[in-house]
Image 1 (cartoon, rainbow, N blue to C red):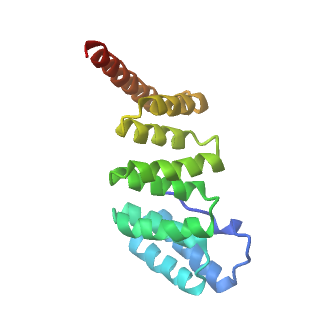
Image 2 (image 1 turned 90 degrees about the horizontal axis):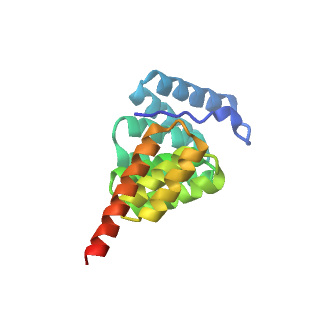
Amino acid sequence: PWIFVIDSGALEVPVPLDREATLRQAEKLLRQGKLDGAIAEFTRAIELRPDLAPAFANRAAAYVRQRDHQRAISDFDPAIELNPADAASLLARASIHATQGHARRSIADLDRAVKIDPQLSVAYFKRGNAHLDLGELDRALSDYDKAIELDPRDAVAYFNRSLAHERADAREELVDLG
């Protein structure tokens, strides 16, 4: 499982000390893997300041680690609404959509993520996976190519690209037989 902590120190709006302390404590607990405590502190931070996108995003990350994907989605939604340029939250929400079999939703989030950060190789990789799941092989291949261009050491992207090529070749053989 992955974890990310969005640094609340980069907030554009100054946070009063008690709110900042609550948020920092929650981030610390999340890094330590104390998920219930982190969730409680992020909840407290949100109650004190409901416009703190990092509190929603990091509480969502804690829910992901607990495998509570519905609550995670419920927190990623306001995190993204409050900070539409948060590629990490879009990427995380896209991953949840993908695991739930919602490839189109995943692709929509990944489209937004690559517009925000065109160098985000993992977004192209994950979008390639979603296209592969949908049988959109040309799009999958294009995304895997871009992921590999951005991160030539990503062995899994090479492997998945080969799978997409195999499926495309098999599809062509079926067309030729028909």
